[in-house]
Length: 281
Image (cartoon, rainbow, N blue to C red):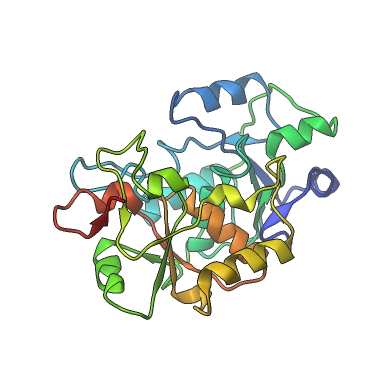
């Protein structure tokens, strides 16, 4: 069973398994159709496609939710069933951004109690570089029955974070780029800055130069330094909309650390209500 990362060679070894579902998570904020178009042109054998906006997010309510709110459990469970995922399925998800999008699906399955899920190390680029096959055949998945078992304590809302700010019990990590954290550059959301008391922890620092995850030891050292004695279970991770924060969570779990907490609404949700504590420099 693969629970965090899987290499291309490891995936090749189980490619013929009837207990395997591969999910292509490629997506671009700049062009929300680009990932699906790329999937239609070429993808891993038997892969299905997951659209970040349509499949991995719920309804956006302007002024109330962030940009990628979590879908309802029942709605997402039905989608997982359509993809052919049940309790016995090994899920492998990939993208072309070093796991930045695929880690969202990885986390969502963890959230619903499915541990048999891993992100493809190096994404589709590593798969191609090792001369493994691609196809343009669109997979017709055989539906199975996914039964959700939502895990308690691993996801929180803004009200929880408001209280956490006032408590020494919790540490808050911001997974966005450092310049966005500092409020120097905000290309997406209408307000720049970060949540009060949060520490900058860009998810891109989980990579090496080829956008492969650092070694388990390197990741452990990174997050132990950031946590500075705080337990992972009392660490709240956020980003712009609850997507790339999952990359930090995956990195921590791959390093052997316990599951931290996701503020799923993240910055785009935090700034929907006036009066929430924001630091702009």
